[in-house]
Image (cartoon, rainbow, N blue to C red; front, side, top):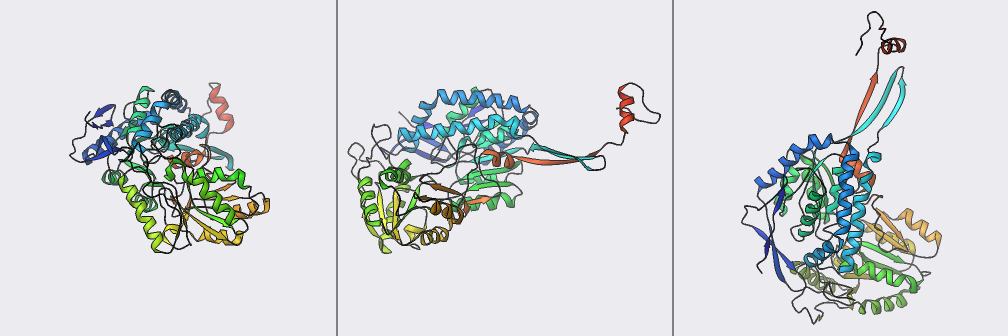
Length: 503
């Protein structure tokens, strides 16, 4: 069967792009090309934005509870299509079916929170800030927003669009050109949920499409999730064109294992945090800092646990890790290990070129562990795949110093049974999320998410009430009514005062 040519969704219609440039969508277990993603033209991007701009006034004036009705309907359709969507994710991304289902469980929660938009949009009022003067603010939507999700969570991050839509905005989503098909199916479900034409549009493409959305005069703001380098570029581009920008960047997350950690209990959690989703997630553990008291025991047990992870196709039962997303990603992992070894890292576990008998052409890379020092490439830079570093530390303060030296500030985790250690760690690490005996402390939908330093560019984090703040603006009203109160009473009774104005 010939590869499918994907379409854009603009103003209620599925439209084939006129471009002659396409990105191959590849099954990473077999290297088979099964779809082509168009790199849409700038005219097609402009048409999507125009559709949103035209739909905005009516959607903005749709009462919040009715906007929520559409999201409730979408939630039900997502639940019904959960297994179908998970299978799309497995095919275009490569993660295991259980990981894909886990992504969708969290993704559907992203629809549930903005269903409460009538409560979330409440403003605030202060009576008598001056004599006879009241002051209040109300939240208003801003217009058209662009959502630029990454390849690694094609459902979860794409569904960020539910917050701006709930707030009364309209949205253009540009899915990752590597994994666009999940969002296209979600768009079909949104259409079936009663979303009016033009409120949500999907335009496929690469960096040029993203840049056009960041600079388009009719776009009010941009939400991006991806690498720190691109997050900074998107942020600078969008804000220099007068737009709001909320850009979540990369991560180099550290785990600290103290001497009192219960290794039997925490080991499975640490291994999964390192290698779940084939380590292609921003919350993945990258560097493990182990107190010298338990270093040797932890290292040996960790390596042995990692050896037991099974590689295979995402649909195969009992598989722990699928392939990485594509050939360039695989090549980058090989290069990262080679550079680490050249800088003096010690290879404790070599996952390069594993044998996966049923998939000889797949982009597989097994768990790889380096004993490395801070400052080296492997320890310092984000490696978006199953290459992890481990290091011995003498104290908690040394571990915290290493965490805070990193240019990234996404997540840090401590494993300990000592409340004093945990409290000091929580206070002292300079990261946006902290875990205590939880290796992947990804916030639930009704809590904000975002890092610090080069892991986040913007003023409002993603999700929850921070999302409502980002996708609305507070309009402040100061009012005084000059008609005397007794005059107002007379007007109500049909007996206006002489000289008063009745309206």
